[in-house]
Length: 457
Image 1 (cartoon, rainbow, N blue to C red):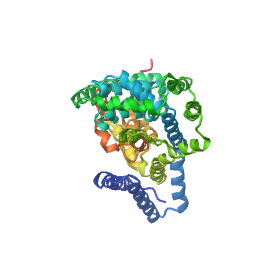
Image 2: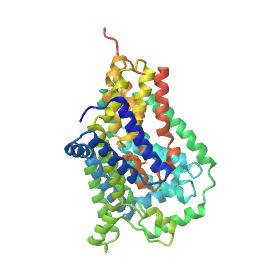
Image 3: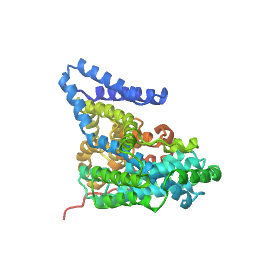
Image 4: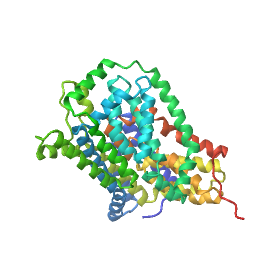
């Protein structure tokens, strides 16, 4: 297959984005159909360009292979959610939260709590699927806007993930740029702290403007949770265990398996009549709440492997699309010419940020939104005498934090599936992700916070 030029690559990418945007935003479709349609069109275009079926198959395989581990982790998280609810862990978090979190400042409190949890464990996904679910349940019970609460949860989880030395995406950005990890985290404060503070102000303003919480519903929910679940200090054990595993740098898969095992033991201790067959059903199809309150049932009917399969299917199709785009050189053809024409820090930072956002939109994969712009623009940063720390910060600001805002993205689809709220609903309230690219571009244009290479003696 012949190498394509810049113009052809841009036309393909713009057409793809138009189809995806029209399908998801215009017609309100779930992302699966538009993504599948784009994959079919891309394969048809490749065949017209004389690509072989082996090349098509290789592109799909290479794209999907990059996310085999994350996909398996998603299945484990589905299991973890189910056993955490059955063991009373998420209900206990809700009860303790009702009694400790500020009601008047619930939304900013949710943002801060998720920030601290994410910072401690280094995983936005885990923060969202554990503490996030509990906080969302509390917010909905109080009568708050679910999309606003979800935006606060996501903003906090993304902040913690971005700034934690235990985070995969943070380590990846540092490695791709060739910067030292803790220096990278310190340098990110130039854009992260302003984004965090303005997000906090936004949540304070909107949370305060929300209608007064309905404490009757809150008290009713607490009573129902106490009636149907075992609520005591014992429920904190799996949460403490997760923090311990994170600080011991135990990888995600064994951490999740350990936590699932401990939570399962708690289930059998709480309910000695619980059977292996019931456990198998719980893991496969998730927890089904059967209280007399429909709202509580809706909040706690979650988890299970089968309930993650919609997200997994979308991720597989999206990664197949990304693999084909890379295999046929479409992404490289669009990015490489730009890198050669960037002669000022402002232009370079802006284009790198936009490229990270574009990769998220076109490919939908968090890691590739860091890797591809990093490879494409690393030489340009070196040519302008910018330190690798400047590149690694830009890769985070325009790459990993944006994936949560893409309906067909790995992180976005996971968050929507886990919280039960569409990406387009919580997107306007995910202030932290929206602000990080803005402050990064301002830093590039003004020069404030940019790191330059040290002059040799």
